[in-house]
Image (cartoon, rainbow, N blue to C red; front, side, top):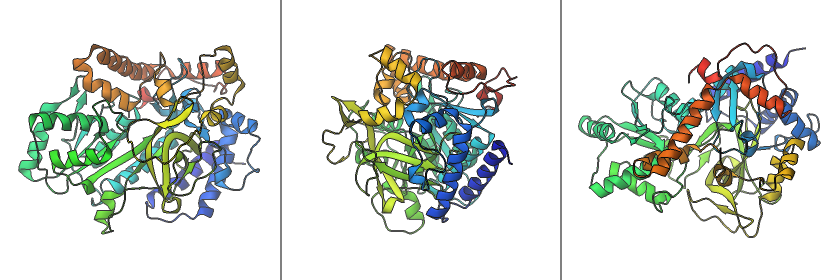
Length: 493
């Protein structure tokens, strides 16, 4: 009988072939269902914490015949547990999630060699298809990156992902322009003026907040650019309102005003560390393919499925109705197939696309959006998120005991978690603190604490994580650990 490792490798190779076939390839629902059930059986066998969760829900392989019925894990679980479907000593890559209820684990997501191939392969294909759809194989351009570099913030998903984009699509003069002291304004202005003078298009990628901050500074100083046709801009991470009220339409207007890039060449990306595949909006791809303009949406690639779930009972919602976005991603081989997030959004085109409208938080016991992309949300009524959190966070005896012993520790989501002492700032929060740190001692302290945490967690021996997991009885202690290095120090991303 094939070993779990052989089955994992075989499934990985099949998913990689699906990814390589591209975003326009067809994977029927029956085919997706077959792969999903295979992955469920494998992850139930190899992932102890997931198996414990499924057993409590009384669902195991053989009990379900549809991918929609495979148990979903709430993304908060990644902040308190080591969720890995492979022996941890095989880790070669890891990311730190923002926020955590644990002072020891800090939301670390590990991937083995197969998982690294999947996450890099999926996002290279998505980036090529939606940010560079007009590029032939091997074509490159200068990329200006307004985000922390992997050297500044090891284990930050945004830094790792943007470095991969630079590696695969950027020319040698591509550069990170957000350092510990803020935006490298001198080199950014120089690069933009060089593009203007040469007529050679550039691509800008980075954190939404960094662009808002830069554009507002340009407005104050009456600085504008006229970048060559074909230039494009990609933002991610969301906007949290640190620099005033800026809607998505306001942002597009600023891009046009300051850079002369039309909104058709503005691309937004939604990335979640807990699920492998980033989702891009399709505005630029539709222009390149000669398709008529339409309201922006994020096409879901063949190897993924997305459903908006009702906040009260987690039932699937029809297109256009706002709920919590749940992802089934075949590229999640090293973790778990199905993840439900705290992103509020809706599906489009009979579920083949989706859009995010904000993130959820608890406010007076009711669900309300965070202020990063406020749009028309639709009636949320008196819906409460607590039952969903209870089902997806308090599933282990260990956690239930902790909550019982400390009434101050309650199931919570993104914003509340980040406010706790010892929590890890998310990528957007780190960027915000970097941008204002020169004028605020408090922001500078938060910036340093966050960046030091990324480095500290990267340099911490892998054995430490395994031992902490063993203490909490969440995963088995893998035998034969020899290395004193972490996944990131063994193989820098």
